[in-house]
Length: 262
Ligand SMILES: Nc1ncnc2c1ncn2[C@@H]1O[C@H](COP(=O)(O)OP(=O)(O)O)[C@@H](O)[C@H]1O
Ligand SMILES: [Mg+2]
Image 1 (tube, rainbow, N blue to C red):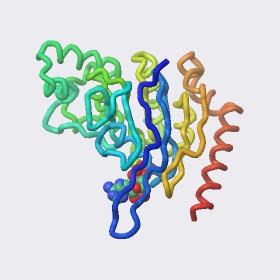
Image 2 (cartoon, rainbow, N blue to C red):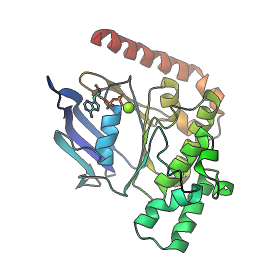
Image 3 (cartoon, protein in one colour):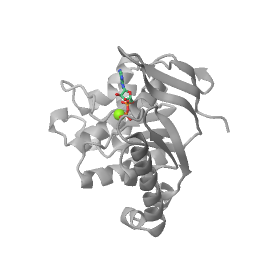
């Protein structure tokens, strides 16, 4: 199988008045079709920088990044982005927000409406098309953001701590919703979090990052998300021995690294 996305010996440095900040150091990673890759790491380890390079918002200082063998030089509709804070347009209603990208791409009215409604259905917001954005809860706003990111039928979904601002209950049901959408759409996903539990629950592959310079230090293949898709309840998964064992293992790694960099 050929990779959807490939990053090879990728480095990003931010210039400063003094020493440049090495936000990403020698990142080599491939994303296979339908993988759910989660990046976990403390604040400042380069997660957002990594996502921004994939989105085409920033260029690497050196190294290469390619989507289906084509170098990435800027943003494109082959990548859908969901931000931590929704980036919806407050003067448009839910449906208009979801359609907006398609409108810009020149998709006709009837067709873009149909696509937008399909995607609102997918995130469980079919009845909210005519609602203004400010009337929605934080979780619903993130669902609109997800529907919008899906409208261009991207090759990969890029999600930067999309659940970071939600309360614990909403957060867990959003984890479940995102996994169901992933299962239905067969998208490849790159998802950032600093919650270990969230990372373990959602990932088919977990990459653990550490700061100064930002590197990938560990990788794990996981199948907790597939157990959820197959019908095991979330709580049963998150309280299982396997889950707790790997959670503690990763906690120990992250704490060890923190001590090293202190
Ligand atoms: N535009 C920027 N200019 C200078 N330094 C930056 C910039 N963006 C991020 N950084 C620095 O790069 C490092 C990685 O940041 P970031 O990718 O935002 O990490 P994370 O998302 O994991 O918190 C941090 O040390 C941060 O301060
Ligand atoms: Mg970040």
